[in-house]
Length: 330
Length: 286
Image (cartoon, rainbow over all chains, first blue to last red; front, side, top):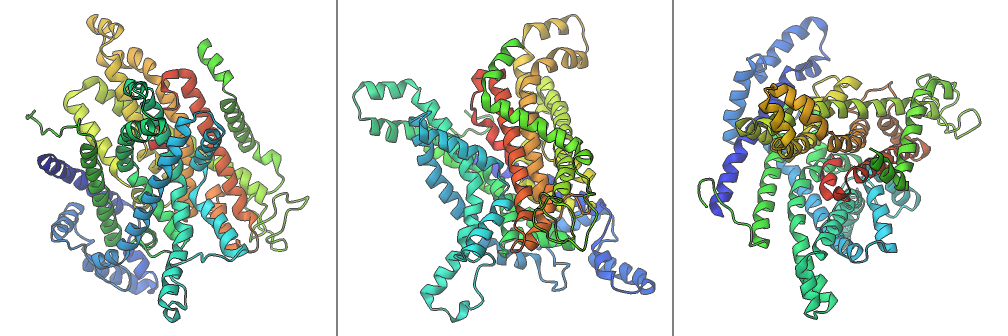
């Protein structure tokens, strides 16, 4: 299994290189440069000169291949360069500040999604075509079709503006420092409620659908028949024999859906003004901040690759029938 | 084909979905006939107006008629959905055929590329690329299409793997047909059913992606009205004029929902075995 993990990691490297090269090429070949934005305020005469200076400063005057090679060389030393933004801080530092928030949001989302979708899926599968099953099916279709930014706006109107129950932007209130300890915790939590609600909505629809489907397939199997035939209580049959097998595909799907979840945090973070990776990415995109964009891509891609690997390995742990075999060994 | 129609006609939800899609297309095409207003003409005396006889859905911050903007927005959203799905499907068919027919190293390379794209958070990639291409309808369609071909590639490859061992393929190979002819005339037509389903389900996904990008201000640029754009501009006035944010989102929801119902219906009618297969859901959310 260790070998398998290592092999997968080694195989993931070319994937990462491919991704970075393609984006690097697209970004650098496209018209428009960050120096345009920075030199924009200067008057026309000095700006040509200023542009040249800026270009040399950032190494943008060198051929594309050289730029990529230099960037890779620094990447190996975990040097993502400095942001083009006026603060000029190291990219790694900027991302490091924001990564925990995005990770927190995504992990909480995943936990909630799994905790809710498994019982929903099991319940509607064991009572196929019941009222509950029909209601969840409607919910699933609507959940798939609802744009998350729209849902976010509607919830903001309802809970933030009309009812005034929940804060709608940022992670802390302005008077945070003056609150008591417990009040501070509640303040932080209340800022998270709406974003997490929005982010879980779409995922919940998908996962409960998968769970239902997986369960429906499992309960048709012979071993469920025999479990019933030997007189086990229905609760044991479903809760133990069926559920364990039905959970297996969910692990893979969890891994596959990670890119979507992380991508969704871009919109959620932008709407609720949460200082996470997604918001940083959008800002960087507007400012054409190459180093931050590339850094973000590399970090997000690596995280998803690792998470997928973990999901694969977890699959092996929960299903002993799966054997990890390296090529040439059996 | 008769079986298909009979099965499809029994699925009421799918029929409703199909009818709504048709209505949407008609509304988008007839936009200039249906509304007397120019979607981009500001009217500074009538800003943020509530719904009235003249402006059934009210007006926005610049006094533009919201109904007109919604109708013209439907044109953009539907076009983006169609064209980007077309691009993605074309790429998917070519790559999937190459991989499935040739096997070996070609197959391995293409499937590696599919894995690469599937693992990557697509929205981040879209943002990175869009930042540097002047966003316009064309770049949006190209970019969404170029990052959305993985599902179709997998489907086509899977069909090819099953079909290439069949007798009619072996026969045409043995009488000396070229590889291209075997693929084009014999295998592809038989592999189109799942592709059709994937296309129907891919259009709403593309519409959702476009509206998300436009909402962030990185999609189709103003003055072009798209549903995502209207929402983006509307959210600044959310406390005074909630309808600016409400209608476009509702339109997206209805459109995506109808396409999904239609797609599921086509799938069920084509192949009852695929019924409620979970495979689709992984691809519909970008």
